[in-house]
Length: 266
Image (cartoon, rainbow, N blue to C red; front, side, top):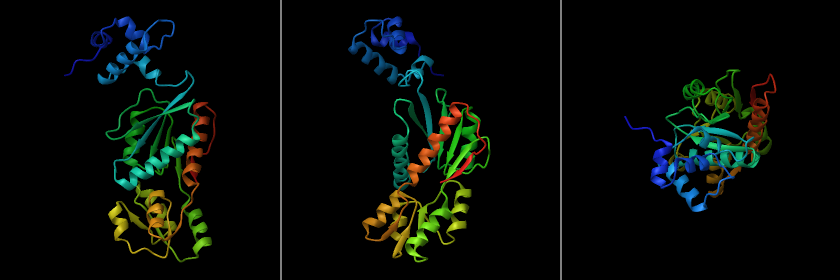
């Protein structure tokens, strides 16, 4: 079994005292420590993956800021990766940077000790249950439907998208989207778009015979078809509206404000 790294190991590698390492970890501004020494100690801490509780707290930009762990599913294909980055970009627009920080996590899922809350994005219910059992902080499911009032659930209102698409194209369109991790989300899509086409890879898109008009809720798919000169209906504000809902839920639950609604369709 590997020996646990201690503060004395960090001090020895950095050529400083354990007290100096402690001052740096605890962000002591009343001690005179050169920037060079501070940088070296922090680099060695990172190299050795040394994570004392005090160092974890210093990940926060201010004493009152919150750390949010962001979990995503196992699919790392280009289309899924693009959608995840698009979601993170919209989160960064909505979350005040001086009040919230994000920690990215992936499989194998683990407990994030320093997290104040968790956002689980496009994962299946089995993975969601694992995350819920490992962590005891507020948990928000985005594009996942655990249907459990212990958690918050934010999904797309596909019937609303359908109505908007029909205003634009009538019935003359094809609905194309990424295959969701949660089968309940898939069922929700099919209940609105019975002939929905699900894709997972760029090659799946290339093999499609595009309809004259395409409807999608995925930015990567919209850009693919727009590049091919196809008419595309894509709800531009959907991701941002979901992120605003996530932020609203987090603000209330972290302030211990009681509310009855836990499921949202955007």
